[in-house]
Length: 423
Image (cartoon, rainbow, N blue to C red):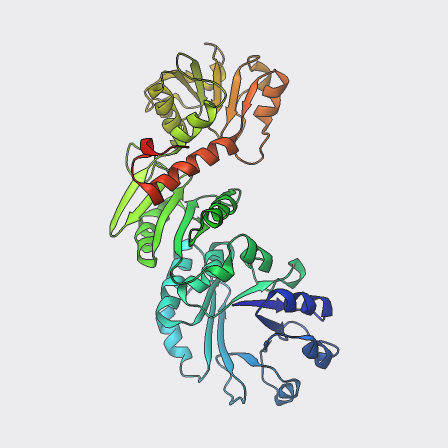
């Protein structure tokens, strides 16, 4: 279920909550309505009164449930939510829950701050075992709000609009419904996601969940910020909570296995499988415009995506050069290495940017070549804008993103051999 949070005296907010939510939470700990009777009567869905202290007079307004901090001892004639909030950290959850159970309640709610995605996964693991209302606040805790029905959480809290947000990391109710298909999620829903740092600019949550919907797959895709030092702990935890597959972005692609770069993980039982669909995805997008066989290709950057693209371009018959600020980093790619400032010195037919920015003087771009930028947002990057002025053929990062995502689906849902997948 979805519970709309209302933190101001607004009949308009109540009206919208009636249309979209299953429950309404009046945050009476945050505002004192001028006429609570009118506000309560406007609610057509079950109503939770969120309070810091209990006043028996509140019962005259007929709340369906009352939420009180677990330290408040009181017998109520309506269902009680016994709640705990920690806006700084996620403590030891079993110990906390045991302490809270000294207070009799119909529901127990634990809301903590997630300082990492590991905290969020710990919370999900715990609520599956207890069926409490458990969630994590903050950017790192967003996944706990989305996946609530998958882990047996009775409901999640969501504002109708920005003005009704009551905690960091809350998603709008419409986003939960339309992007993540929240009402259709269940304990049978398969879990997939993106890990990396940062992940905020990625559009993968929109594209993958849309694809799941169109393909009729009972699956959901979420984004989880993960730092390098967290990866070793995160992967086994993802397996424990039930993830079936992950997309991997920077800076983690080269952390999964020494000397290799991977952007896709599949969990099958207790085993992990790694693949890279960046290279085939980029070249498939590129070759919709031009065949690379016999062409001179210059790649800017020497990260995980650059390695994969360089190898795939060579496999398809291209002459590949790599331009990077640090020549030593580029030497792990089996290709000619150039200092970045000399990217155009040898000439090229195709230029591919695999860095997060535009690292070269755009006035030095060669005219009427093919220029690709693997950045997805914005679609028209500074490099592509400059290339367009030079009369170049453009290949967008979104084109590659779609192709590599198709490759990931082949691994996750069809088979383990990308070459067997047709786009």
